Image (tube, rainbow, N blue to C red):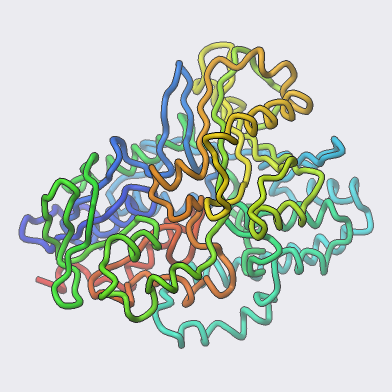
Length: 504
């Protein structure tokens, strides 16, 4: 690839729908391969679920806050002829998280094996050997599932058959929690080493054990924070696209993908404008792409209305963004507060559709690393609670404020004393926001749930099986959600989409 080759006006044209991490990464990769690219974003700012917003002097990252596998970002900057460090400071965190148990105890979770062994010994001395075995399995699974397969297409059943023996050997037919429980006896450690699928929308008791790779991925490449917020990464990626001579349009809502025969020919905007293209890449929710942007007559192979209705979708997300007039220096950058129930709470969220009285929470305090994100003397926070998606029928117009209040009371009683008196700015989003603003089907925070039968070949393919010259990136396609996953989905396009010169 010639990263510095200028875009030719006669070059084949690709339209990218959506400007989340997946869409921006796809545009940069296509630009480096000679494509003329137009990115269309329906909102006023790029970023999709990874956008940022300012409120009352506080800067909030609306979505992803955990940055791993930074080499995927470095690769994008290299393709655009720059270095990531020219534009972005990624600061490694140590520890990665503090995990707080309901009894008040905690574990500092890091990438330091010696420190982690000491933490395991402190909680459950008999589990140290089991921890070592689990991490060895995690590393083997990471080599296969992330290094080997995350950027490989799964467009044919034989692609799945080729890796199935290795998946079975590593326990991929079991759940993440089942594999953790085979190695660890202490219920707290079983939770610590099985919660990771929740970061990508999966139930640890149902998500394939291939996702046991996440602890090894974090250990190998670290957990980082972007100074200035994750939104700085979005701004940097948008700048790379423009630097390639390509276009990013906001306030441009795609109403339909236009098709001739069974070949994508461009898009029609809600304004009525049509934009012709030689290929279309959708970073929209996969179920939205198939269910709303293509007519049912073109969805006969796999993604029919019936198939989309029967699919399992990830949980919803309740997020409270708030800023305080005081600082809480004892609170880490990332804290996970586990509630009194683990499996029963997940059953309520994923299966029963019940908004439980208890909860487990992820608390983000980015000002622990970057004080510039809040006014002097203040702290920026968001707290996230997994909740049922909209299939549960919860009336969030009624339930949101009481639920926020319960969370605030819990935080005040545990980590943030006298919280309510010091909150000076506040915003709440619910699964309703994810459906109405992010166009996530059923308000699911991560699209399709990452079960074994909704992963790899069983997931919507990166090269559409329904329409030629339509491609998918983002959380809804292979390899799945999370920043490394969606960036890797754009890498898959290098394998399934031709270079521009091949179409000239």
